[in-house]
Length: 273
Image (tube, rainbow, N blue to C red; front, side):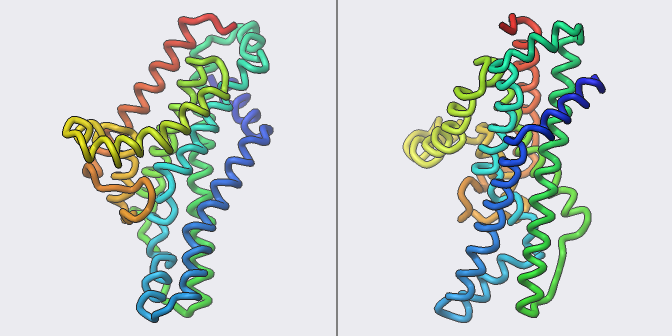
């Protein structure tokens, strides 16, 4: 498995898509969590509104700012990473070549999952790091007090962000194995994240009682609820308080396990051609 992990890490490092997705994640996080609010602060009509906007960019809000976009936008990028990592192997025909070298399928699979877990963690830490730098710069430029979250809070925030993105990444992996490619899994996954769940939550759940109950089991809703328990505001797209933090974390872990088992079963039982 270690050899497969090393090979997968090298592929992720060499693949331009990985760096593009990381760059897009960082740009979106910086622009919408700090630059746009700061511009709003500079052009605010009243002192009270300006103060509220400025407070939202301070270091004390590093955690909700960093993971606020994970249920939707960053989640779609994580799904893309998972789908590309697996689906490209079918497109290039490299999975057959690797299996000819006699490594066990499950060893390859475990190595790939471990490499993706490390890559997702690196993305989460990068978003937190850049957010910390930007919030510190804003606070310093405005002579505001700097209050960082505690180490325990930061650890919980990073772990929660990693769990959310890993669930979406594993969904991409599962779909890529099911459909033996990457285009269709990315399309279906993004439509689910950005479209279907929003329709269930904002339309069906309002009109139908069973849909209101159903939404509490959706991965996006639970991801948004987990962000909410860490300080995310309900005005952020995808963030909600439908369930408590403990349930949200358990449901996300359950989804991760299911996605891993289904993808592993498909890889183990089905011909790769």
